[in-house]
Length: 361
Image 1 (cartoon, one colour):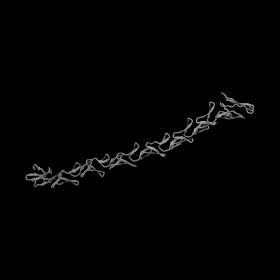
Image 2 (tube, rainbow, N blue to C red):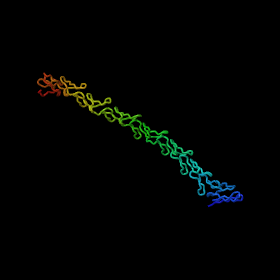
Image 3 (cartoon, rainbow, N blue to C red):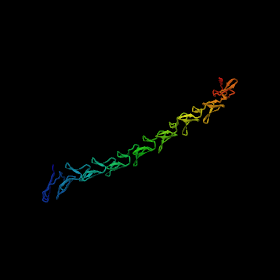
Image 4 (cartoon, rainbow, N blue to C red):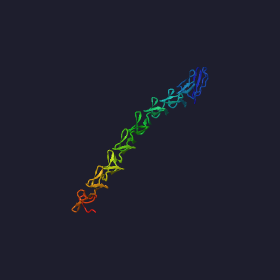
């Protein structure tokens, strides 16, 4: 449909048509003017020629004889409509908050924002403030996106969070939360030597205690070896939380596994070192008739001496009893009788207060 308005001036009729305007006045030469399909509205007149008015639709302006939509709008159904992101204010298209119109009439959102449903929406982690995108705490707008500044952090939702396990944001840096830990190449690690992270807690091996620098073994006479507390004395092992000597009859003395008196630890066992002595119930004992004196067994019966790990009477004595009224009498203590009393030497044997029932052969 074409709309025409007949306007008269100086006796000439100007037909403002849907397609063209024809002027017949002598003062205005005949001209065909393309109105690009605009209808005309008396409420929005635009001056054309000398005293003639051909009104354009809202949002359009008469430019060099043509009704043209204002920057940022296009003809749609005979009406000038603003493009996305702008609205008609007066006779011009105005961009939404956070956008400006370029020379082509397109609304361009501020850095970090994109046009969505006619609105400038900021990138993740930023909000539109005063027409610009402002990033969340600890982040800066870089290349149109919010970049978290603290090392080892990243955006999660609209906030900067620390990415290493067991870490948290403190001020403008990521710190490890477990005691005795620090950030090493983006990982929270326990700093004391021989400690490990266990469910967010720096933990030392069994029988050791953590400090700022190392795990220290608590049992006496132990030390840390390859990440575990080991007893240092030879022939000792950890028994619960105590270092104990493993060879029989040994005790720990000043960090050394020690055998009973008269014995020495040889190849993991206590061996009696005194001549003729043997181990009995954890004690080095001498043969009958002898006692341990220093590092040797010494026969204590007068007239006896140590031979083949036994105390025997010398050649001038006989052991076990003396002649007394025709009987071989054994005194309350072992003695060696003289040759005159009994004859050649015999081994000191037999119980006290007993009679010998055989004669010398």
